[in-house]
Image (cartoon, rainbow over the protein chains, first blue to last red):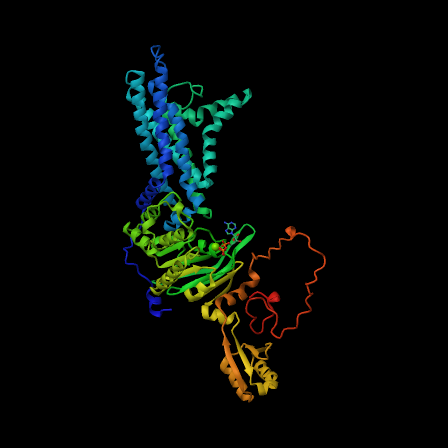
Length: 272
Length: 360
Ligand SMILES: Nc1ncnc2c1ncn2[C@@H]1O[C@H](COP(=O)(O)OP(=O)(O)OP(=O)(O)O)[C@@H](O)[C@H]1O
Ligand SMILES: [Mg+2]
């Protein structure tokens, strides 16, 4: 239409700057904080971890004078176990809600690097869940010690029950995020994750006797058993030979790495 | 190079057994508004998704400025796209939606307020986009496309749901963007709108390229322009003579009911010359221009996949009296001078009637 503009093309007055991972992280943080579902889900996490962490020690306190069985921090386990549902749900929504609305197309047009989008979402969610769970488990732990009126357990008890559990929760969250990127469907992703968490336990309970080997593996390595191992308490669902807390972390880390690889391939290869 | 062209070569996309896009080769040049037309399901959106690397071509390539989109550095500053205006998280405000996109693309946050003003959404920018009307959503999608002030813009049905003022605004916006030297590819089903917006057209049907030419050329090629020629009454007997001369000159003449001729295939001055040479006086020699809509309908009529039929309500009509006294059976239709045609323009010369016309 206009021959001389044809030759020059358009040059934007806005300075062109190469976007990087930091930009993507900032964008994900904006997305995360700007929807109510984040507030609701994380609010539920707060209520569950603090609520259960207070109520259970309160309930057992009345018949407390007996021999001190489990360390006081262990009561926090139940709240954290319930809290995994919140963490899993929000993590699964991270990608699947973008696929559901089609927003993912806008996102991947603004940032064609699938790896960067995946890394940014993972980083933001990991840090968010880790920080929040750490704060909550510490507060809940203090409640428990105070309510039970037990001597302060040493740092070797505190560390796995707070930092360890928080890392485990955060890893569970990003596992769920990766599953969401592969499944692309909110309900499907949440269901798949709940299956991963609950199914081994349920299956183990109904396994016939000849399969007791399989049964004990399922019991020991199910996610609730691994989670309880951070508290070094309760025979729990397992028979006492479950991995110790820090080993659980490595196991989950391996699973997360596999899921991340799968999520990347799915984002990279499949049509959006 | 400063030329940000979209170039497709042998672009093909199959979804299972369904071929959505078949062997498309085209260029979209800067400085023009290129209209992207085709019936429902013809593959326009699929092509646009492949341009921005969302769908992988089954075969063939498409590049923007010489590179596949996914390998383009600073891609969001080079290409902006409105693919689906509903593609927002309903719980997020327009401002936060655009802010996250700006951050993702490395664009200053102040640009968000600018585009909000451009699309006229500033007043509702803080509201959750769930409550947006169709047109407001569309404006938000356009804002997202403009955010990076890119050289290449793709708009998939941008005027969907816009009010007349919004449509006018989009029209002037497209033209302005193209006049600034940008590459603008717009798909639309509104032919009247395309006729005044686009300079160039890409028309596809069932995933195949049907036309790639300027709007003017498209209209004159695919229809429909004809000249009405009426011989002076006292020479009416010589109409046949003129028709023969027209046919000899490569045109086609059809007789209209009032005795005038409908001439296609040769232009007006030539008709006048022919009449003069044959010494036939004319009382009328008038051009009839077809619209883009007519031309488009003609070109795509046999590649339309989804066509409605009359709603007969047959199963619901109460049985009527067998006799229809007032229903005079229609006699055989008179053989029309101008051949029976659909509601679209008549076929251009040298082409078989629509139903049997071979696909180009
Ligand atoms: N993800 C997909 N999976 C399977 N088939 C698809 C997919 N996307 C598109 N198609 C098919 O490809 C064809 C082209 O669809 P497309 O959306 O590109 O058409 P369109 O020209 O944009 O139509 P419209 O004018 O209605 O928007 C259709 O037959 C559609 O059913
Ligand atoms: Mg479409």
